[in-house]
Image (tube, rainbow, N blue to C red; front, top):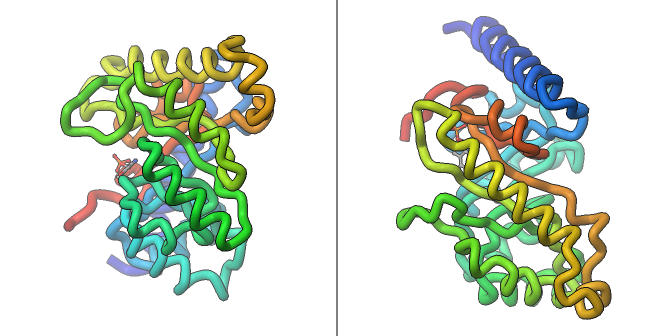
Length: 249
Ligand SMILES: *Cc1c(COP(=O)(O)O)cnc(C)c1O
């Protein structure tokens, strides 16, 4: 296929996804500007990412530290801070240093030990690191993320770190062919989010560390189920194949 043809296909897909996000918002009375589209560019070449940027996308997601770091370095001179990189995959402690000043948001924090390492590296670089807590809402054995009943405990620890700002929650829902099957998981994550944001649990303790105004991100929904996720309150959808086509590993 010619480059022009590829860009045309990419543009059509992006327009279609944005329209579907808007329609999902309309169905539930939400403002589409509340939803950020993250283009998940894992395994995809730089040229495709640049094309997506030229077509208006600004947020990109990678699930491997090496790939995020490499793509960031290769594109930073051209696009600077307008191109934003999200770390969406499982993060090992020994790789925190490589992403801490490259990712605008780490979506996948699921342990206190990882939090400790992020705190340490962020302090060294004198920055505040925005993170989400990954929750395994469907309780799948194969998935990373904290279980629902471990969430509050982890949250209460993470908010104490001066160089970490807990911005919200993230989940990777099960792979399904009928996206309606994931509605209950998205609805569950939203409920957990609201409980944390508004309920007066340990109020005095929390008010010392936690500013609820910054707790405003719900990262949920992928190619197969993002419309349902948006109906259930998602503020960040992470879409790979829907934008860039199938991945060949
Ligand atoms: C790959 C990936 C996505 C995107 O998946 P698609 O089904 O291709 O849209 C979203 N989130 C995470 C964490 C991923 O690893």
